[in-house]
Image (cartoon, rainbow, N blue to C red; front, top):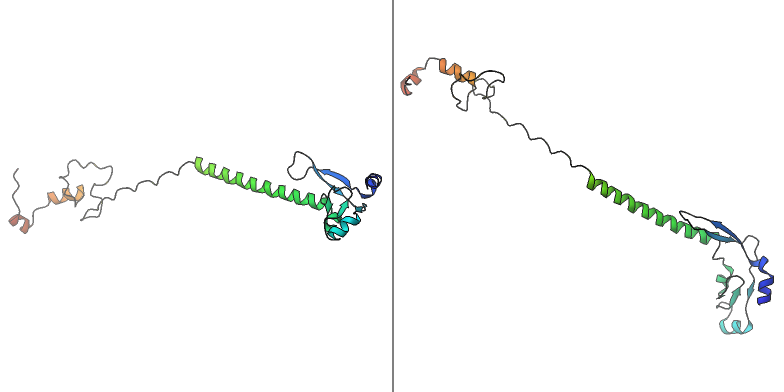
Length: 178
């Protein structure tokens, strides 16, 4: 068996192709078997003990006893390399997605907080008489106006203080002393 193994190496061995694959620094490769002929051995004792479907077949280049289907398969061919490469691609994609999620979380943590909404201007009650604000119009001097009553603007308070009292006010109100 060893003599046949050595002298038929060119018949059963495949051609090795090195490829970097997806994201690899080290080389990974596969064997291409386009013109190779699988050379299988067995013994009569093994066939009698395990039958033709048992692990009784020795394929040159595999280095172990196998079932017939495993002995005829090429475990290091381009298909196996493609499966390894796809697994590398998926791992790289998962790593990249995790990195993107981490970066998004960091950006969210370090993002400036939005400015709080400005507080609304306090609502000033309108004058009951004219509808203007009770604080008076901006830019006018209201120092000579009578004190605020919470219902009228300085102009209306000034007008009201300069009017003659009504009959009711004259009868029922207190007299002002000057």
